Image (cartoon, rainbow, N blue to C red; front, side, top):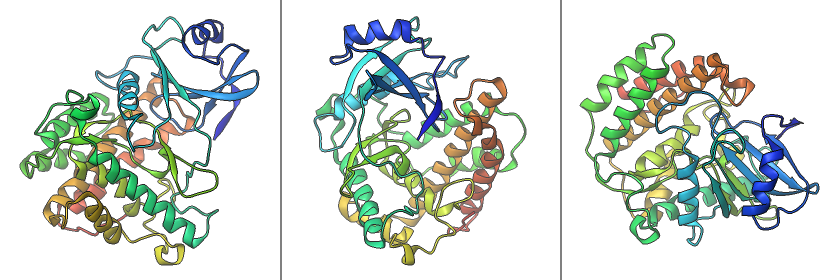
Length: 350
């Protein structure tokens, strides 16, 4: 989805010469449109003589939290995965000079195809929906099968203690952007360290694996590019799976989720079946219910912290989308759902 107005914040006067020097095929007149959404790193479609050719992702304006919005990491991980079975948009160039467009950015190929914002896939048939979900399941398992060391990413994150470090990180991020007290977040900040199962698997995790962060071929249920690697790191694959499966726990209104959908009628698998299919593909076998509960609670806690950060940037005037202010209320809702699951209501949904 493209926002209607051409972008004024991108300094095309400086960007165009930089592109000519660093990106093959960028020799014509450059124009840019901003993709809708993009709550974190603003993303733009670049045209060369009116033809869409490249995509640019940059850091947002304003004062940023430490380690957040790391487009440099996005560029590195997509470079590493470019020659694997994991589909990514081909990375082309990284610019760490903020003088060009105001913040660091990178440029990648424009991945043509279909992008599904609605998890219910309303424009597809029942059979096609099932195929799309099976493809997402397959690609996530494929990503987690990649050996980080084999693709030069052994230092992309610290090995071991993934959940402990992530809980500490997102607790710090949440506290830094907190605008009002969310009781459920306070409880989760205590519960998560106390119930950490100390899982040690260490793989490349995407961090926000969902249907709207993928491009599908125009003529087949095949993913041609997984996008938005900002939250990627080395971590436990169950955390990635839980973040992905959150869609089954939240409704359409406000979340674009599936909790209030008739899944059999749509041809979309139930959560338990989807998780089991991933476990079979990834070789995990049967997933321990205690571990799965913890992964879900963690994923929702992190999601709530991210939403709180988006809301705070909206208050500060630095958010990328006009809908960012809505995330404040949803941070509390997601945290409340996480606490219900942590408290034993394992099938809880919004």
